[in-house]
Image (spheres, rainbow, N blue to C red):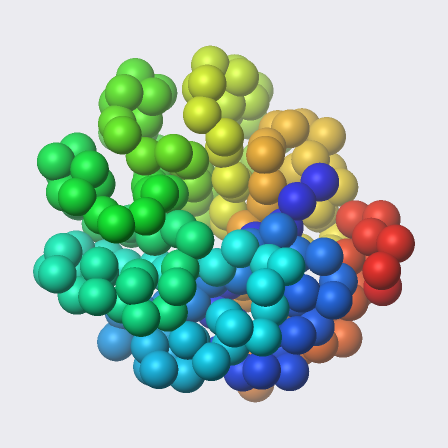
Length: 197
């Protein structure tokens, strides 16, 4: 099972994620996000973790800023969290991960037809035991990342129920003060069966 750790903002946490075997780390470039990181800092962190793919997260951002930061940081992927069009996605300078909230408006067909390389399904606080959700994931021919209330306690159950390409974990690796916790990162990967922890 693969993990994508979101909201990385410091070198120690980035190195821990890389050491534990994270498939991806995400940098938040929405200035209003609590985990916002300056692109210059993200660029330094990205160079220190060459074994982990880096993702830049944006929401309805000017395309020129997205591409500028992607080049500056050397991102492997750009994750789009807003209402970006298919044409917008085609103009991003690196592969795209498109996030969809799984609600009554979610369309498997729309997700399948867009030009993104991967799909991130954000469950929010929904129950991941939902059989329809598992069926939706099976129908998608793209790689699917699942996000939403995932932590050490439920990560294996999410894997068994949904069989995603990867899980996206953010709040599940945070300490009480909202900062990412190295202890929780290591605990997540121990539960997932990582041999490097």
